[in-house]
View 1 (cartoon, rainbow, N blue to C red):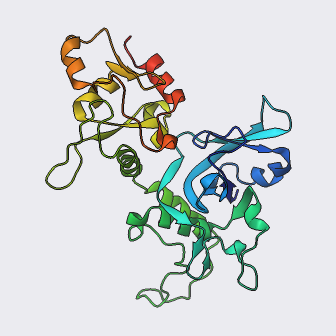
View 2: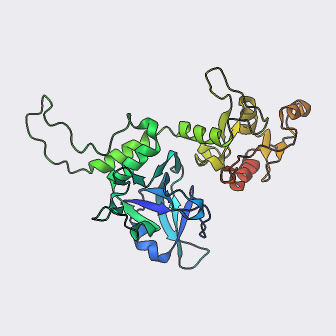
View 3: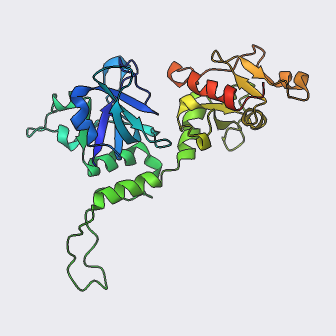
Length: 303
């Protein structure tokens, strides 16, 4: 097993769905196989309006041939492991590059390596990038640069010997396991909707600056729904309750659907946007994905 970097752009020509799968040609198969059952970073290149940096993490479950396209393969993402960073992480830092392998002996960028769509990354570099992606955890999570414990501490009479277990890998797993996914999901969803309920249009902020609106999963985590903005929507408390219980739903075009099971349709209609449509995020990339909306209509909505 090994950590990897997978390059993904919004206008990719491949059949990618970062929360669930990553498609790639056969020439990358041997390299990609090394990352099975381990973690990868998603990297955003310059093309397609990209920002040259890291956007999130996911764990590769397995790699298999694409059943629909010859000489193509798919890396399946383990359910519930995809998570966008709270903060975008640039590939450059003050003293070089976040991926140490990108630095040539003269300090310049290895222009060939950064073009690799799939490439390895050390556990140390991986952990440092993750910590920058979730900055609020920097002081709480184990640092990758803590190579050794203080051997002068009281009670340690013998010199410490090398520990056979991979300490860097342990730190990475510990870092990932302690990331507060609910907080990250809430932050991204509320930012995408400008802290406004998509169904009512209300933007209520308390005296402390906290939004009344909640981040709702369209496809629940319990049903393997990912913590991604495309599977989220900002809803006020009452509307969230109704959405989770299938009393309201959305069409792929974001028309608000009201169940025939509601006991007072007229009262419900007063809560809804006058247009009859949910408010969409300003950024089209954050719009609810039809895949998740369809799941909600078929599995939750009481039509």
